[in-house]
Image 1 (cartoon, rainbow, N blue to C red):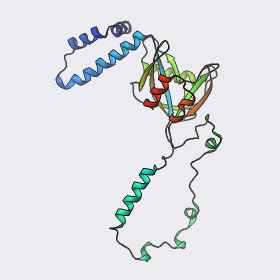
Image 2 (image 1 turned 135 degrees about the horizontal axis):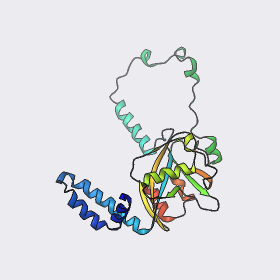
Image 3 (image 1 turned 180 degrees about the horizontal axis):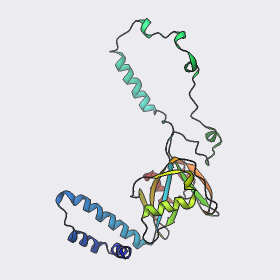
Image 4 (image 1 turned 45 degrees about the vertical axis):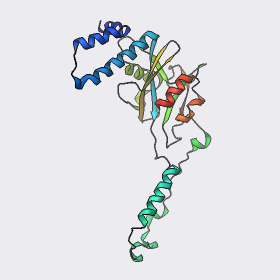
Length: 245
């Protein structure tokens, strides 16, 4: 009953706005929040009028190592070090020189690991062990279809976040991974084909996602933001992802 009433309100945003003002006259301090409510209601109404609603899961792997320092930042650090050097006190050599006998054990043989992995060298985009200093996003492809994010059509009485969670659970074995959905509000939406798709960001905390046998998807890749154009062919969707990610 409540769900049907809500859908009716979505189809009549002006009536819904009047009801909000009549039922809850907000003080001046609360008016910005009420305006946000009305804006969200209007956006949802426009999406509902456009056709079907879809919820998509934007599964991302966070950076594992710190990104390399940009050239402009390195130049600034060198300039800053030069300025500070003018005011540093010179200490006696016996306080600053390090003797060979003082460097012992594993510390003397330490070498940092390479930032480039085997997956980077072979361009294996199915692996999570690549582009360690950047965010990676999971794209999936059904047999005979095109690359996209995991998504499902919104069901009656279901929030858009629950739809995105179901899209993830239907595609991969969530018992083997630890996902974390960031908030309840979608990060963006776009109108494509017969409806509007809402995107919810989800961070991969632990585990390696594997596609389920009956998910309908046959391939997957982990790509960085600058690689999205190699897979996403819809201009509207690609433009949104470039802004949203």
